[in-house]
Every structure is written in structure tokens, then in C-alpha cells.
Length: 239
Ligand code: PGA
Image (cartoon, rainbow, N blue to C red; front, side, top):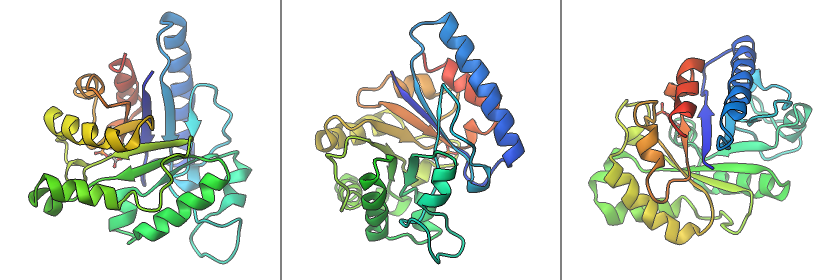
């Protein structure tokens, strides 16, 4: 069993998300009927305006972001009350685009983690280094990744970690199999049983070999998951 997650980022509308979800449900149902070993855990992170009632049987819908609050005055943000309306109990925290573009600090990521883990949410928590840190060598990379785990309770049972090197995200070129293996092997020593995903230019053509690596429990996919045909191909190639 692998975890295959799709991050829509700022793509898709409510209408297109709904048709994506319906097609996905159909595809997975068919696959399961044909192949008993199709047992992936699948999660989809649409934009906030396209959150849907979490009624699909074969995958979970999660939010790309939420503010650690029940409700309140946090203009532009959504909190627990808005997630609960859709039955959302899965949340992405710490994606590099939120850390880099929206300047979310480690302490704020940890605060979100604390709030939503106390509520039992399934948390997909992202870490990953920039090109600048990569150039400083392996030790700097590992130290940086450790720092992104500060304040995160690694004994929390509903946690998934995604290692997503920023330099590989959206570039079309994933980290090499050797690079993924090296980082995952190291992280696994710290993370123990926590599932560890790789993300960064995963696509139909490379998903099989990435998933076959020791220490890779799944993938978090951006651009190659936005077209339903491509995402289904990723699922197909993940068997
Ligand atoms: P990508 O994005 O697959 O387009 O590289 C991955 C991510 O940001 O989660």
C-alpha cells in the first residue's frame, strides 16, 4: 500500500474539481474491481474555494491550508468551522510555497500542527530544502530538514511527512533516485514508522521507480496530477 496525494495548488475551479473527483472515484472503483492489490491511500488537496463534501469512498479530500482557530478575525483564512462544514479532517501543513511565498515561519507551522493534531486531523507535513542549502552540502541539508521538524510531535499517529526538495518542485526534473534514497534513509531513522512521501516533479514516467525505492511510502504530486488522465496514469503506474 502506497500513499498517493495530489496538490492542486491554485488550479481548478469548484466545477472542474467536482468532475475530477467523480472521474477519479469511477477509475479507482474499476481498478479495485479488476485488481485486488489496488489498495493505495489517496488524498486530494483542491483549492479552498473547491472544497467538497468528503463523501467519496476511494479517496480523502484535504485542505491545502487552514488557520489554527475555530473561527475569528483572520481575513482571507479559513478555520475549523469552515473545514467542518465539508467534513474535512485532512490538512497540508508546511508546503514550501507557503513557507517561501507566504512567509510562514517554522513556529507558525508548529502552531498549526499542534492545533489540528489535537483535533485528530490527518496531517501531511512538508519539508524540503532550497537550491542554496543543497549547494552547502549534505550536512547543511540534513540540519535544515531537522529544523523544519522543530515543534512537530513525531509520535502523533495521524502524521504523514512529505520530503519535497524545493529545487525539484515544478521543475519537471525530480531529484535523482540516489538523492531520494539518501535523504529518505536518513529521515527514516528519525521518523520511524511515520509514512514518508517524496514530492517534486513526480509524473507518470518516473512514479514507478520512485515508489520502488526503500524508504519511500508514497508521493505528493503537483502539476502532473492536475489533469485527471495524468493522475490516473500515475495511479496505474504505481501498482
Ligand atoms: P510538482 O509539485 O509535482 O509540480 O513538482 C509538487 C508539490 O509542490 O507538492
